Length: 224
Ligand code: DC
Image (tube, rainbow, N blue to C red; front, side, top):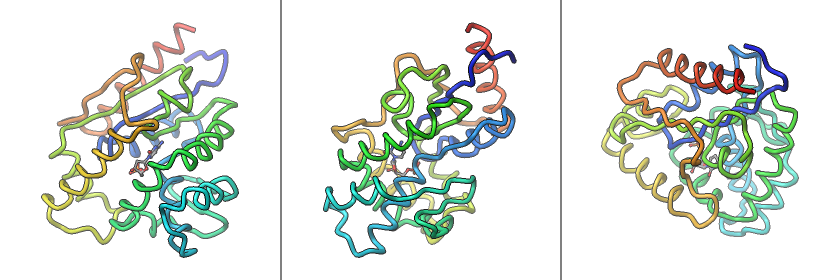
């Protein structure tokens, strides 16, 4: 692949669509940096809870998000020196992260941090609003989706997530509630950028999805 400038690759979509695994693999292949922005919302929620901060104290949580030091070295996630890799993948933080992700000032703070992390290019950034808000000019925008039952099954078998009910139906209900919140919030809702390439990963194995994404990246880079 020939590239005049290191690309920004935006990968968005709902939970369980395969974003994490695919973004990590693409970053490895291209020797790009992988930034999991969901982990930033999770880490902020974790720290707010640990500090006894009410999650609806928007000003305080946003201040925390502006000041925090994030150390994102996939798969490790640390905030202000605390390794929270495991603690942020629990049902309680699932809900807390979705709550803080609705707060406009928190989003503004994290979007600014994410732009700073990606401005040099050479990054695969995954989240919900990367192609729509964080980097609307990203060279490559991918939207990964999958049907809800499959997304719940994947989440149920994801070893990174602990403490969840083993019932796929419970996980499906929780996933649906968080998706609804992500899609209907007034600021930066989860939505497909008009110029994103949508890949439905239902029934696809990860290597197949990775190959498809690499083809999209190749044609984008070739067209520059
Ligand atoms: O991808 P995830 O499940 O780790 O994300 C945690 C929460 O943060 C989820 O409710 C979606 C939200 N989020 C967001 O609103 N914007 C992002 N760029 C990334 C995650």
